[in-house]
Image (cartoon, one colour):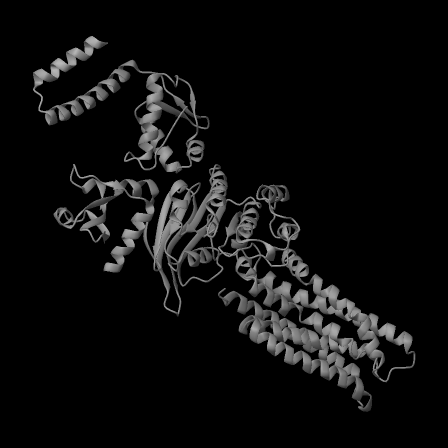
Length: 287
Length: 205
Length: 124
């Protein structure tokens, strides 16, 4: 099995208190992995560690088969497209100048493809970057990331701050990107609904720790939401309820349950990734 | 490295044009001073501070975050800044020489001080300034660095002007001083580059 | 080939795909030798995970409904009439179970159930 990304025991300790601890997960080639977690959970830190933009304290990272500390790594970056949450081109540059700059950075820069995306996104070619709206800035970042024929896309909150219509357009583009079976994506977002559709795997980071990394389908099949009274909840066998419980003022509770262990006859509702996430976090807080 | 340099030039090219426009007023100003280079040295100094200006700019626009994701090694990024400085100081030097030629044309009497040598010395001095400032900027950041930079530039500008006035009264071998400056510039830049690369590698952006 | 999936259905998505393709094959809408979209293409077209579609195809292949030719793709397998009969029997048994459960709820006797059955066959 080829892996686009292999992360083992990754740790990073910041003096201010936050630390990423012992994070391990893999992204098989050709798959999409959604990295979820609240703000400050460590998603951006993980992506920056992967690209060696910041130094790790412990652990191993392998990107497209190459260790991120090896001297070959700079060359591997040619095949990795990155979109960061704050699109970061110099303010006075315009679309055409960005093209010229990138042409001299990426060996596989595809000018035709770049301008195709620019046209598709209706971006003005001569306007300065500082005059772009947030959505336009994101679209430019995405156009750049896709136009050098990468095999791996790292997207850090690439759809944040965009309206739903634009988000859908962009998710479509990412979906198309993975039609080729050696194209992989790692995308982080706290807009879980974006990830829920086309991700193959979901990894959940919470306060620097990886709570799970699982096939998305398995998650949706394993968990369900139970709406019942407190008494009914108490009657359930041990271990059925996972994570925390949400209670209403009217005596009802909402709990995350393992479907297979719920006694037959009790109705279990669909649990989306977001609900799974929320209940897990509630459980962590309760401990 | 070429891509990064290109990016820096796109950013500063407006500044270069604006600065070049000052050539005429500064030539006129220089005519009123005993030396034919007094105010023209500003071009060289401006050229030398371009790398630090570029560094500040990168930080403000958060380009430095994205830059670390690109397939350009840290060494090339750092070298690019020095190269930018040398090229810009070189352009500044050419402008200063042009200005000096014009001044000489209006004032053909012999200079009290070999103006050309002064320009060369200023070029070397500014290269040393650049070598000192780039790692400092990288370490303490653009805000504090800018203040420090402005103080040093004002100081150097003043020295340049004073030198033009008082040097004729000293019996110093300008050739010797120029040679010393050359050695200092080469060594200084070399050390500075090593230090900057080290800072860049260990920086958290 | 029509495939409609519901994300909020209690039936897992891979199962929905599996059932629908199986249905197409059994009903004849998909003929022997017809080529199916690749696992990847289907996933991208439906905007779902490739793991999901792979699972559906794996099950279909295990049960003999489709077969894969390396490098070429997935094809509908020869219709096995015996298997068809088995499938239909399986469906029948499932329905019977449901009928029995409902009958229990209505409090019907076995005799009453048989009467309803006879009447329904007469209607055909």
